[in-house]
Length: 295
Image 1 (spheres, rainbow, N blue to C red):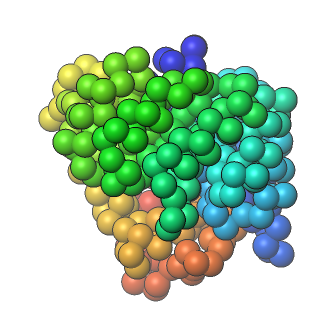
Image 2 (cartoon, one colour):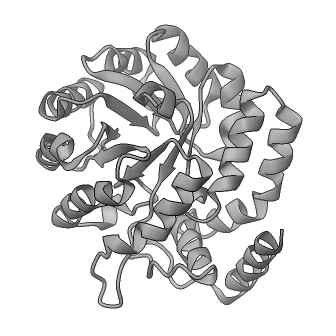
């Protein structure tokens, strides 16, 4: 499968496992990777937001980028998330190809004083260091239509993971960058409307736990069966509602707690994520996971 085909499918965002001493434990991803490969997940991302990228040190991010590709072993496309300071982003990007990545995903800089022109320079330097196709991860459409179009025109940029609920901004961006592949970056619940506008595929944290559910949603979207896609998404709505608790601070925590309940302990979520889950949330999650396993 080509990278373009993979980006049009599911971009699974892998969690970062931690051991009891708060050290990263990449090998604990093995059963998750096997599950994703068996289900047919097209691409797997290391050092994404579900990976707690901003909670990792640069050395931990480097190790995850270096070790996870061996677990995937060419059975899915590998996307390496890079970001934070431009120096750190370039450092990760420069070794991504040698580590086994097929593309780099550039996190949109969260700096409160980021300028549109500065972000373009940031992406340009990362792309030059990587020598790989570049996927933009855009969460803030407030940088403006012209700035987004300029980013899409940079050499090496092949796709945008659109993680902003402004659908009209997405429509304008798609029209302004006809050669760029747009992907729903807000996971399964937002995939139907973004697909209707021309985006292809979606990102997913659910794949860590139940990749077959994500694959079924993708199949329904590709078949144009929106009622089926929406029905499947409705089944996971309680899971997404739990992830949205505590101002979205339970996003990764719920995934990790669900994995532990399912028998794949990948450890805790680091602060500032919420951990452990509130007792009532954990009880609801336990019932949900048990129901999925029975189904």
